[in-house]
Amino acid sequence: MTDRSAVDTIRGYFYQFDYSILKVVQLSKLDDSIAVECIEDVDIRTATEVTAVQCKYYSGTEYNHSVIKPAVMLMLTHFKAIRDDGKPVVRYMLCGHYGSGHHKLALPIDVAFLKQHFLTYSEKKVEHRHHEELGLSDADLAEFLSVLEIDINAASFEDQFEQVILELQAAFNCTRFTAEYFYYNNALALMRELSIQPLQADRTITKRTLLERSDTSGVLFNEWFVRKKGERAHFAALRKQYFSDLNQSPFERFFLIEVDPSMFVRSDLKDVLHTLSKKWSKTSRRDGASSFCPYVYVHGLPSEDLVALKKELATEEFGFIDGYDFLGADFNVKSISKPATHNNGIRLKLLNSIADLEATLCAVTKTREVYQFHLGNSYFDPANEAVKHVQIQLRKLTDIKAII
Image 1 (cartoon, rainbow, N blue to C red):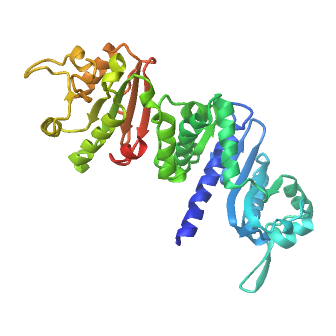
Image 2 (image 1 turned 45 degrees about the vertical axis):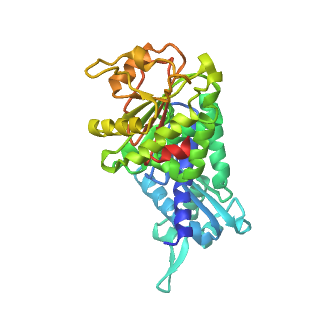
Image 3 (image 1 turned 90 degrees about the vertical axis):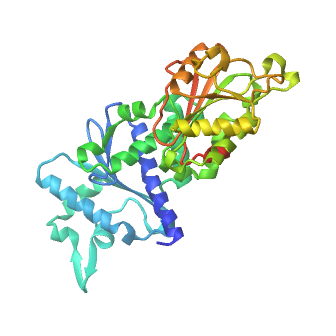
């Protein structure tokens, strides 16, 4: 597969996921639902009817009848099967975005056009009439057309995405950033999860469920979201939203960093710690009582590596404290929370454990903000609504520098 076709394929996946999210959010009732990859790409189920939708993205393709002919024939086959079984009527929709060729299809189509352009084909020099092989009359085909909708002017990739974000903003009464980075991100993960379930019953979701499961308290960036957004744009948006003006207020900021012991490089972690200290400390003489520096907790770091890290920082005369005042002492919240000033040279406050982190968060009285960088699953919850808690998923430790 060429790079261009690979990109088109990925955009096609996202186009279908976005369409699915859009249709769920637009359902009029909370218990109405959609199902993915069942009759068609998306089945929209309300209390009164089912609409089977095939949704395709062909931005680089010219529209021709042959492009949608296989889908029309499959829909007609399904139409006959459920009618023969006495099952309720299903509505069908073909929804596609094409680069050109829209003039070739004048809607609505009639039975003659349906038979000539969508149901007749040649195979091994033998002409086949799909409707005749199914034993359907013109009256049957007219009935099929009454439940078939074709739209070859569907929204572009970008326009559909904008519509999704606007619908989520309205549903959750939130900003665009929140709609995209909280709710859309989580909805995208849900759709991806649904699409790979082996059982049809597990590929169905109601509007109520999607809204509830998309509404999480943290920020969780899944791999598909980053792949769609692009890593550079993704990091830039995070930086703008969360890390552009941290130095403006003397808050108590806690940076939680997860490392993978199997891939840990001490120099990378030290680089991150120096960056955090440099960007989010104010300890000059003129800062006075408003001086501050960040707290840092490193999750997943073996104790021997933590000790080695502290020894190197001390040797390099990098000023830090960890809340332990002497050998054998217990953790002292008053010690770790002492102000960082020009005189005492404190540039960083290192927390050794989750317990030390929790104790400090409980004891500090200033405005507290927790920025948790995790590699997969969240490992900390402040369980206090007064504490701002931002969760950011990483692929690797060094991503932190690109974000902050």
